[in-house]
Every structure is written in C-alpha cells, then in structure tokens.
Length: 412
Image (cartoon, rainbow, N blue to C red; front, top):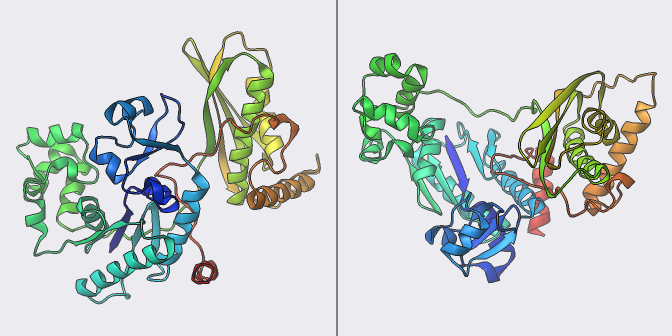
C-alpha cells in the first residue's frame, strides 16, 4: 500500500504558478479580511509559526512580511485532476482521500518494498515533470493502509518512507501518541491514564486491556500499529448531502440582498448536484442572526428537483416568506435525500426543459467561467459567496481515456 500527501498543497500550487512567491512565507486565505482564515501555509510560513487555521491578523503579527493571497479553487482542482491522472498510470486502484492525498493499492504492480520505493520516487518525479517542480510530496509505503498514511504523515517533505517489520518498532519508539492518525489530545490523556505514553507502548500493550478500557477504538488502534488491519482502497461514494454557507459581509434585513446571496448558494449547490448526475428530494435553509441565535427549516419534496431555480424557490419559501425583523449575518442551504437522476418526468410542469436548460448553462459557465450567463436574481453578486475549497474535498477520478488525454496535453 502507498499513500501520497502533497506538501503544503495550496501554497505550493501558488508558488508553482508564481515564481516570485517561492522560498517566501506565503499564506493562502479564504478571505483577505483581518478575520479571514489561512487555509494553506507554505513550508516557509510554517517555519515562522504561520499554520493552517491561523487568522490573517495573527499571521501578520507573527511575520509582518508574510505574503497573503486569496485562494483560487479552480487552480487547485485542475492540479489535483492532473496529479490523479498521473497516479492512475501506476495502478487502477486509487482512492482520493482529500484534495491533496490519495491511497494506491499496488498489489500486482510491485513485487516488493524495494520496487515500490523506486515507483514512489518515479511518481514524485513524474508529478514534478508534469505539474511543476514546486509540487513536492511525501509518500508512505507499508503493508497496510493505516501504516502507509502514518508513514507519509511523519516523513520529511519531498521524501519516501517505508515501514516494515524490521523498522516498525524503532520508528514508533518515543513517538508521541498524537502522531498517530486518529489519536487526539483527549484520547491521549486516556491512554496515559493506562500507563501508555508513546506509540511503542501502545503497540506492545495488552489488546484485551485496551478493549475493556477504551472499547473498539482502543483495540483498532492497537491493531493498526501492529499491522493487523486489512483495509483496502475504496472508490469515492456519492455524497449524502450537498450544501453551501456564507458569512455575510453586510449584516442586514434587506430581502433583495439576502435573496441574491442565497440564489448564488443554490446555484453552487445545484451545479455540484448536476455534475454528479443527482437529484434532491429534500431542501433545508439556515439563518444566523447578528445578535445571536438562528433557525433551520427543511422540507421533503414530493417530486425531486434538479435545477437551480427550483432549489431556490424551495429555500425562498422556507426562509424569506416574511420580512426578517433582525439583522442576518449567516446564510446556508443544504440538499438532502439525494439519488441518481431517474429520468422520470412529471406531467405537472416542464421539468424536461428545466433540466436541459440547467445543463446547458452549466456547460457554458464551466467552459467560460462563472457568471458568463446568470439569472437576474444574482445580479451584483459576483463578489459574494465565492467558490471555496477545503482539504477534505476531493475531485472525481479521471477514467483511462481522460488520463491519456491529460497526459498528451501536458506532453505536447
């Protein structure tokens, strides 16, 4: 099993795109306001204490000369798609774990750890050749899924670390419990109360004692550290819900403004819904007030919906049927009860035309950019509720034809 983790991913993509940002502390921000959050730090920024989750104002205090830029999700997604197309050339068993991580089952593609290490180094070089020299990664190799990720987590940037029976205990010795994938500080205290102070202690602990004291999580962690798990890679599953949220820069009761922002949230969710060829039989809307509190309303629909206008109409009925009497600071919407598009048409309305129109608009906006064509309800909303991306987000795996096309495009 092989696990690859791209180093300082969002920042590395930006440094690859702009050489003037290389070798400098760089923070990629959700928003550039002082309370904005840094969602990606370069290796240089981490060295001066600026880590993911740091506020913009705090980052400037830590290092006044830090370079701060707003994120560009489309740039990261396209790079991830390219990287996954490269991984797909080495095995047909690839599991995207996040936008910058993946598991590769190399069974049948490598005969031993030495061959795997050569392939891992080849993957790293292949990514640098095609995605850029600044796209560095840590790769972990082990006999199990858990140990492979643990190896990449503790590996140095731009390196390959193999864990096997010969070096496992030496690697675990004196390693903090929280270095393990799945142990937080709260669980660490529970382990220490049992006399377990590092990962080697945990590996050598009595599994029965762990099961009695901590239940299945304790036993499973012992099994992970002893390489006794048989987890395999899995293909991404369809989401159970799709939604978007936004903290409003303008706190207001203005229904025109609130509806405009909400329509954009519905459009973002709708495009994701249609991209996955799903439809929704449930809609929820959420409001948060400036002076505290808020509410959530939801409805289950008799007929599933697919297009943005239908989604917005349902949220509009839930949240904006009356004029709000308190200023609103937060809006969110969510689609649930998702299922593949059935093709079943309702005789009650022109749903076929709605679906065809929605798909046509998606094709145009995906090709030429957001807001190439948009409804009047979204007029003036270009700067609000912009696209976002997080580390736990993934992209769809390209098929073999897409892999060949991507590789040929970059080679030519």
